[in-house]
Length: 85
Image (cartoon, rainbow, N blue to C red; front, side, top):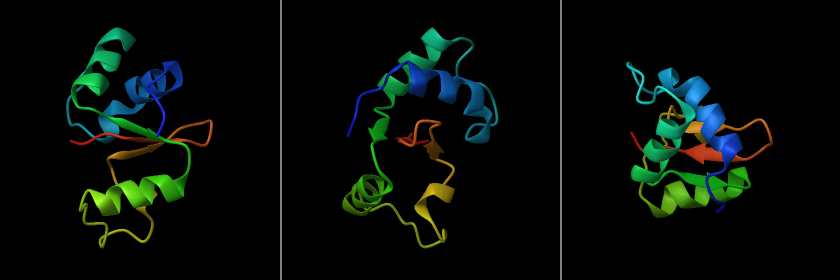
């Protein structure tokens, strides 16, 4: 698992409405604070993400691919951001 960095913050800020019906952050500083408060996780690979979700008991049976979950943001650099809603 990686740490929340500027790539994660910017991507979440720009795409937050995919997961939430209302904006939870009005700027990137608020987005970073939100991600830290909800203990979002960053994964370097899909395999790490899948293992984490399995270990946490997340039901992924509704998805053909775990990256289809609303809580999963595929970052432009190939990593995955998992935000528990």
